[in-house]
Amino acid sequence: MAKVISLINLKGGVGKTTLTVALAEFMAAVYGLKVLVIDIDPQTNSTVALIDEHEWKRRNVRGQTLLSVFKDSVNKYPVFSADEAIIKDVSNVGGGIKGLDLLPSSIDLIEFQDEVLYKGKGVTQDSVMQLRNAIADRINEYDMVMIDCPPDLGLFTQNGLLISDYYLIPVVPDILSTYGIPQIVQRINRFKKNTASKISPLGLVVSKYRAQASVHKGQLHRLKSSAVKLGYQRVFSTIIPENNQSAAAMDYSASYQNLQEKYSYNRPYQEYRQLTEEVLKYVKR
Image 1 (cartoon, rainbow, N blue to C red):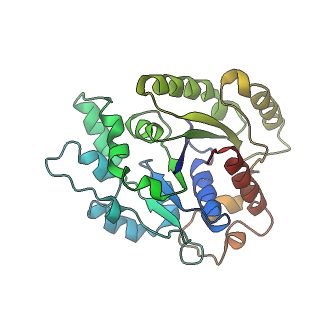
Image 2: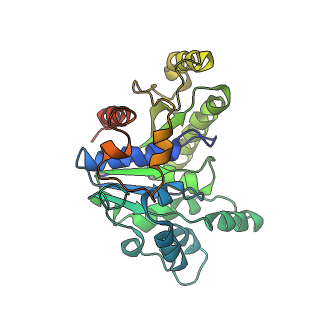
């Protein structure tokens, strides 16, 4: 049975997409797991990090993205097909990593969400079940499912949370990136109670860490000491330092023979591999 992890932070720029993609690639390539990435962020960053932008555009025009999951709820004739939308063996490593699949996002989700809000429909019990209903027949073909959520707790994020076993919060250890953590935990606890979902906190992953920055050191200490009290369970031991290679690795136009080449042969390759091992250790499979 698949284990599902949503990655979420209310602030952008914390390395959420990089972490989603890296964990998925290492789980598939190093640990031999069958992994599905679901990109529910309208920014489509995970999507274009794993497939060519022209391929994404072609699929978007044909309705072979996550957008169709939500449009089907208002259209008379449903068009979404998981078989057609899920792209197999994605990544810019080795021409694609076997066992790593993608359900791509669409920038048109922004317009759809605005339309829903404009019509005053809001988020309902039925509307947060759309993703679950759409992929119910396929999800358990995978060992792990990684969901890249937008930086909010709206309709799309709630669809991801409903099917998730865990949520993971990537943070940069500064004031702005960590300020909303209690709100995330509280809102998800309330969502869990209201929907009877099974989601639990997996922990915080510190990224873009600058060892020489006193603010980062101080915030890291506070995050570790507050983990149980604030309810996010733990701060992962593996810390992802600030580096240019991680950002460059998300450019699909560059191709790599293996993960060592993509993430550099020393760092951050070792950090991502260690973090993947640590995440899998805490996931009950």
